[in-house]
Amino acid sequence: MKKNIVAGNWKMHKSLDEGLKLVSEIATLVKEAPVNEVEIIIVPPFIHLTALNKLLQDNDPIQLGAQNCNEHDSGAYTGEVSAAMLKSSGVVYVIIGHSERRAYFNESDELLAAKINQVLNNGLIPIFCCGEPLSVRESNSQEDFVFTQLTNSLFHLSKESFGKVVIAYEPIWAIGTGVTASAAQAQEMHKAIRNHLASHFGQEAAGNCSILYGGSCKPSNAKELFALNDVDGGLIGGASLNGTDFVDIIRSF
Ligand code: PGA
Image (cartoon, rainbow, N blue to C red; front, top):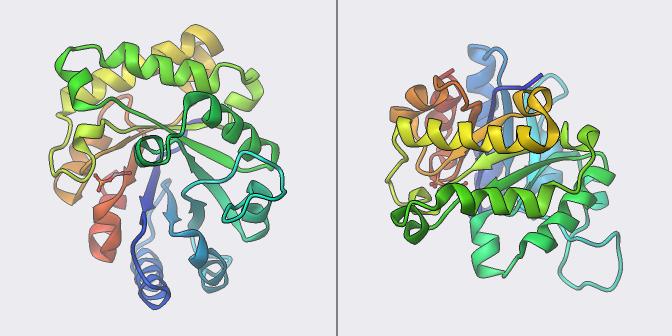
């Protein structure tokens, strides 16, 4: 069954001390007034994962995610991190295909398909990002653009493997800009994504897939977005760097 999920993508922010402080604050706030039926995920830079994993107690309802992984099992790939390493550091989720990785690190749909395989083969859960740039939105071809991303990177999966995948729809024009997709735009795209997934994996599998919204999601708009039929939570950038804002978003369900 699909889950409600709120994931905080820290990107390249926070020193180790700042990261430990932020996670302690979030864990305390969540413990003070437990949040029901929301999977909470913190996605720090790789280097903080082990320390944060030690900090989090078994009873903390917070999971760790990574922002990327390499497409190979292991080998001479200086500077890279494998899915198996992430697994051994307590990671549960891995963001794959964030628009910043696609744009600044030239990650293609085909490369992302290989990364999805790595994540799944190592028993981790991919959060697969898709979303269109402003020029595509302005020419009203956002659906075709996003469908191609989904088809090229996910449609090789078996129905069983697809059942583990989480999707994040993140219109690029809304990321870090303060401009959020309207509720109508978000619902329309999420529904279209679910229908596209259903065309290949079937209604049931598509209905069980969590589809998160990302792009300037904050305490002031999370409630409206999370109430939409096909929005199952959020991938939060900027607002996840502040403990109270992040927990307010979590409490928006
Ligand atoms: P933002 O980032 O919330 O700062 O817009 C979202 C993301 O990039 O995942």
